[in-house]
Image (cartoon, rainbow, N blue to C red; front, side, top):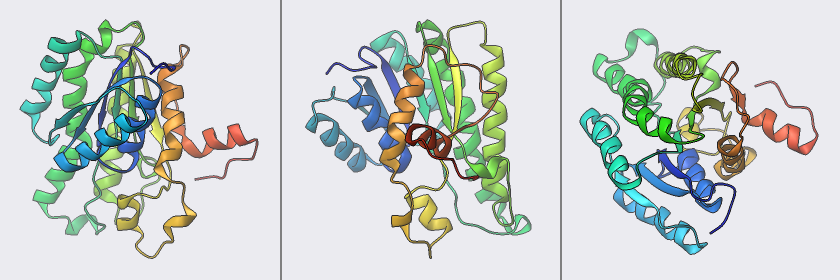
Length: 251
């Protein structure tokens, strides 16, 4: 399949559902060779069927829990052995794990949320940076949230880890600024995902954008030769509004 990303090698985490799955499908539709990381083998196989169904390159399915630090470390070595480089990293995996007062968060749950939402990003950066630096235009995209800059009651663990993720990504971007590697942080806003339904069970999901709608934005970021440093988080709502010619709402 020929497309904007033909010949590019991409890793997508959280690829079994929601935004991660949408990113994996969009990148494959644009011609990238996708390595899909997720915890559920069955859901990965469904993704494989979908990508093969529209003629995309057969994805590499990687059943991996990102809290397995040794597994994330080994992933970098496996990619080098097979492809010698990495062009695109999209880190979409994350967890909410309910809403509760900060003082009521069980320490073991706090540790799990930090591991999934923040530590995994550090381990991925550590494992993937050498591969991304080999690329002539490496791109790393981190899916964040408005909660990173506008935390509110009961969202403490999620907001703190997303804020940490953004700080980590910006620090890394500054460190790699002299290289062809570029980093982007994306706020998808409210979307029709399982995580959103967990947070807002009474909300009508049909009033929200489908995750598939963010796919073209991710492809555009990964194909942009002039992508700059992540001084600002990129907003899906603003991106969509700019392309539809309407004023973007404040999120």
